[in-house]
Length: 251
Ligand SMILES: Nc1ncnc2c1ncn2[C@@H]1O[C@H](COP(=O)(O)OP(=O)(O)OP(=O)(O)O)[C@@H](O)[C@H]1O
Ligand SMILES: [Mg+2]
Image (cartoon, rainbow, N blue to C red; front, top):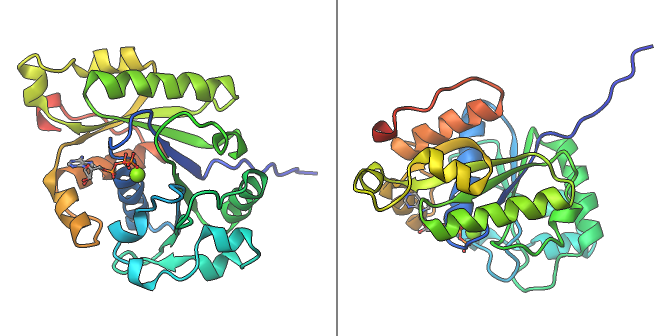
C-alpha cells in the first residue's frame, strides 16, 4: 500500500531582524509573482497593531474583519479579501490592535489554511520575538530580508540563529534595496561578504527600485520593473528552478 506523507512546504514566513528593510514589500511581490505562475496565494499580515498590507494592496477601505475576528470564532473565509488586479491572491489582515493573536490558535490556523491555498505567505513584524515563529510548522520556509547595510545584515544573522535554535531549519536570504554603485564605491560589502556575514543561503537579490514604492503609495503591487523581474526569478528558485543571478551591476 502506498502511504502519502503530506509535507507542508507551501508555508512561507517573511522575517527580518531590523525593521523597515522591505519584508512587507517582499511578501506582496512574492505573492504577485506566484500568482503570475497560476498559484492561489494567501497573504497573512502579522504586524498586529501596525498592519500595513491592506493599505499597500489598496483594500483598507473594504476591510471589516481581520485575524482577531478569526480568533474570536469567525470563519477564515469571511476575513479573507481578494486583491484587485491580482486574481488569486487573498489577504488576511492583521488585528488593528495589539494582543489579538493567540499563539496556539495561530499555529492551528496556519496548518488549516495551508491546505486551502497553493501558497501561504506570513508577513512577520521585525525582530526576534519568537512567540509566533515557534507556532509555525517546522517545514515552514523562512525568508529573511536584509538591506545591504551592516546593521540589517548582522540582525538577519541573529534571526537565523534564533530560528535554528527552535528547529526551523529552512531559511533563505533576500538582499533587498541592492545598489551596485554603493558596492563599487566601497560603501557597502559585496554580495559574497553579505552572505558570509549573515550566514544565510541566498535566494535572491532585489534592486532598489522606486517603482515598488510608487505603486504602494497608490495601493498597488508593482507589475513591471527591475525589482519585479528579480521577484520573478525568486519565485522560480523557490519552485526549484535553477535561475542564475545576473551580474551584480545588472541586478
Ligand atoms: N527594493 C526596494 N526598492 C525601493 N524601495 C523599497 C524596496 N523595498 C522596500 N522599499 C520601500 O521601503 C519602505 C519599507 O518597506 P516595507 O514596509 O516593506 O518594510 P518592512 O520590513 O515590512 O517594515 P516593518 O519592519 O515596519 O514591517 C517602503 O517605503 C517600501 O516601498
Ligand atoms: Mg512590514
